[in-house]
Amino acid sequence: MPSDILIKEVKNKSDLKLFVKFPFELYKNNPYWIPPLIQEEMDFFNPQKNPVYEHAASRQFLAVKNNEIVGRIAGFINFFEVDKMGIKKMRFGYFDIIDDLEVSKVLLEKITEIGKQNHLNFIEGPVGFSNMDKVGVLTMGFEEKGDMISWYNAPYYESHFLNHGFEKANEWHEHYFDVHLQSERTAQYAKMADVIKRRYRLKVVNFTKTKEVLPYVDKIFDLFDKTYSKLISYVPLTEKQIQFFKDKYIKLIDPEFIKYVEDIDGNPIAFAITMRSFSEALKKANGKLFPFGIFHILSAKKNSKEVLFYLIGVHPDYQKKGVIAIIFDEFAKSYTKHGIKRAYRTPELEDNVDINSIWKEFNPINHKRRRTYRRSI
Image (cartoon, rainbow, N blue to C red; front, side, top):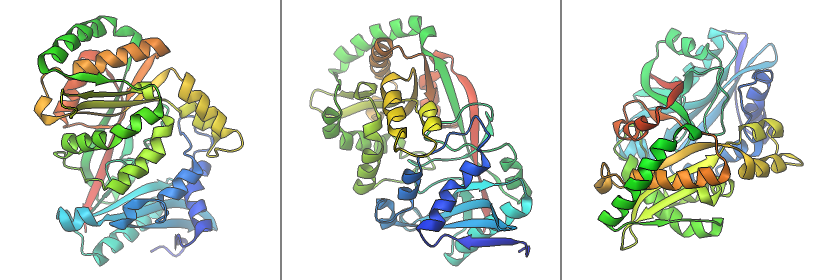
């Protein structure tokens, strides 16, 4: 290890705040980076608040050079993944660095060391504890604005991984489409939706208030599990983790942008969750909810004309039966009512054929790509 780079482990709240705030300094002049909420980031690493720590562990580190913080990294071990699924993976994320290969080297070697101590076979990142966390290093789209559910990074990150002997593990693509250009498509879906609902005796459940959504959240996550469990990167969520994400996101989502379809017996068949874009609001808040950040967030929840497709799922027994037409028909009604102009898709695995086929009719524009990288231990 180079003598002029000190690796400091995060041991207390003060250290953690330095860890969380490092990107604020690194990207302070970058118009595309979106600052997270500082307290939310702090809570993510708090075992008293994040239930994932019941079956997972993490350690965070800062790289210091000439008395200045020049990098950060977090190492994660999901013991369900390691012990129950048999995937001996050392995860890492929250990886930010200046463009200095020695800095990235010592940080990645620290995570490798932890992996060796725990008898793991490889390290992979950037990832979080599970599929519900942020994922991937940006490899395309550096001049596209970020969002609240993905990481932003400078172009040099990828070259650091390659220089240190990492290889591509998985790749995600992000797309968008302009809602107002889809009138012909949405008219087709409206006709299809009526036919599919009658054929399979399906019912749409619409929401206007957050309290109306809550009784359906567990069913939505159960369906999420059935839909995504076949993906290579999937790790199941516990009931407490579901509650954690419910508390984190449900208050931010306009209930009219949650779509839910059930059968005649009340069983979940399909769901989709979109949320208005909070990018501009988060820029103004600059990491703080109070005293004024909360007003920017609440304004965006009601007035933003851009949305993010957060989650979408169809029960395996109903896939490729046209059920997705019902979802899109319902969104078309809500988007028209609220004047939504553009819809962004959050990261989707490049080899997820089912989800990619859903969107092809909208002629989406691929504006970002991101990857995870792995290396044997």
